Image (tube, rainbow, N blue to C red; front, side):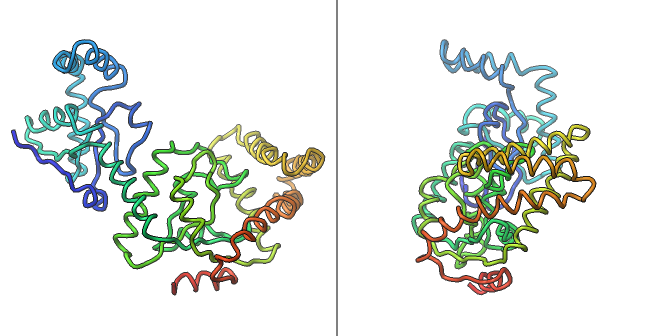
Length: 362
């Protein structure tokens, strides 16, 4: 039986075609593609049993066991999931780990009921390998434009509005600071890398002569880390710096770290949101205790606790006190030190509006 096979990975990834990932859930959770949906041929325990049989008795025995485990109602339910997805996404493709038995068997079962779904040659491993090679090659042959500036200048917001911008913090689901931890956790490292690579592949295809713009980040964004060759290329790229007065930055930080975070926390946790918000603020401050020193941390915690107690009486205004001190004593000196090391790479400085205009022309 000749069934459709896809091996043009660039074209596939750029097409945004929906993908059925038939690997077991544990494999999918360890790393997947942004457009993929996990509709497994075998669940984790079944895959484990088949793997043991393969190791002890070889491929034929493993295939036989797989057929005995995925049969009857189980087989019908899993095939129905594939059918429903393909009906909703007629251009869908299917893949397994390495383009082997699982994806081949899956499309054969679909073909038996009249559905011809293409499968990806080499599976997820080949798609992932293509993305990483493309990212490595891009970094070897291109530089970036790095958007920098003190905390509170709204760099991420600008990145998100630019056609040539890649949102590294969005890919990491973390705002890159002690107060930037997400409510719902970060993606695994592999997913983080896949997202960045796919974003750069897409922009390079759509805007081949345009420099990609990234936010000035450290090598680590929360618990995720930038590939070393990617971070090295960022450090060698030109920098554009937003200049903004302290009060305007403080207002932005207050809105983001306090007001918006409170609303999101209450929506996420419900009745326990008040305590979760308090824990978030205190734990975030304690993360920078080493740099602030024990005594100053204790003073800022007292100011923070007072603001938490009063926040519903003064519309969160008291939070500005500890936040202003933290910005002046921690964030600003840290950013000034980092920016000073990059001063020879700075090609433009200006107000937020001037920077946006400059980036639009470059």
